[in-house]
Image (cartoon, rainbow, N blue to C red):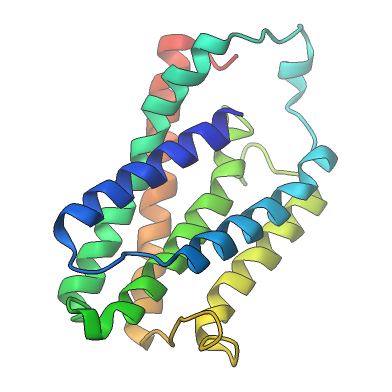
Length: 200
């Protein structure tokens, strides 16, 4: 619930920012539907995940007020990298006119899906994901599959059907930097959040 709330908050904020400055839709309704469908499919594996041992030692508390605070802390993180992606697509790749909106939308579609899919690994544990705490294999596999599909859609034969287009090679050199920075900032904010409020 915290993960979904923060993710949706970030997406709405990003769309509001984009709508104020960009002379075309930053993402088509079809893109949002496909992105959310793929994200939801990736979450099917969550029931098969494991839990950090220390989180099992005492009962966890459900505190609805924590959801809002969590959303405010973690939601804007994705927006920072959405806006970074906007700037990259706008200035680096020249996708700044309605004629080039498909390129812009394709770039944000990939980043949005990949960051949204990665967030489950960041939120499932207060530890460093992948290093100190690794998700169960079904969740790892599903994450990899959905991220692969997300990259393939604009590059493959179905791109035109989904109103996407192939991204230039330089995009895929910048993409890992955006994802690493996203994971790093999320981990830093998570560390502060744990020290200030605890994890549960």
